[in-house]
Length: 280
Ligand SMILES: [Zn+2]
Image (tube, rainbow, N blue to C red; front, side, top):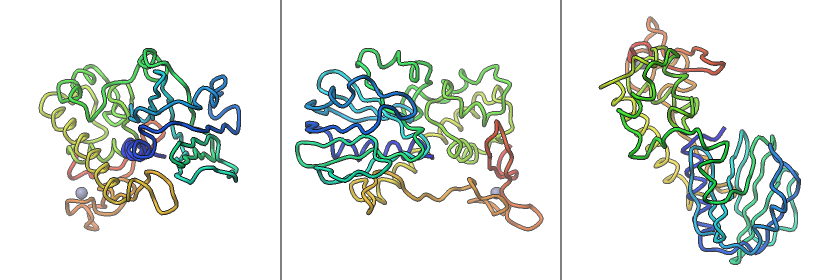
């Protein structure tokens, strides 16, 4: 499943291909994805110019010159694939195709169809049901130790579960919750309300660091954010603890046989990975 850094890299790739370009042809190949597509979706996009592409949490925002925004989400398996226009042969899972006036095509491909697209007026974006309750962007100035501490005050859930709650901070998924807690030296089982003061500062800083490093790694490993198969954005990344059960973590001697290495526990139905030596 794409996490925030992958979505950021997809958005930068889309920006490079779409910004300033007019959508000459938009093809919609089915009426619905995870949700129904808006009425006359393709018609309403055709002829519009793209003025910018950015991200909110894991949502892709393609801003158009008529003050509408295409709100997209990659779901579990969605991808944006760069192609040459006109596309004459469609893959089974190519659901929406955007063709620009410079002969570029972007295909939205999604085998499992947990992804979706909507069309939202700019002034309505913050009130969109999927966006209105989102917490601050983790890489923004609005998110810091004090903001995190305030959001966690009184919460009796484990800190790992609080971090993946999109109202606390937007866009943190399972992988980056484990990696950030490891970086901050905080046990995923610690009660969220006890993450205050210096500890909250450390965790907010760790979240920013791990996300920024992953985005930098994705940006530098791809040429123009495009993989050799034309797909935008996915990249390989090495984790410190994620999916490393029983192995040493990135940075201590916990891999020694007596210590047992990185542990995996299940919280809220999802796996959490942590180093019991480094995280308290
Ligand atoms: Zn360790």
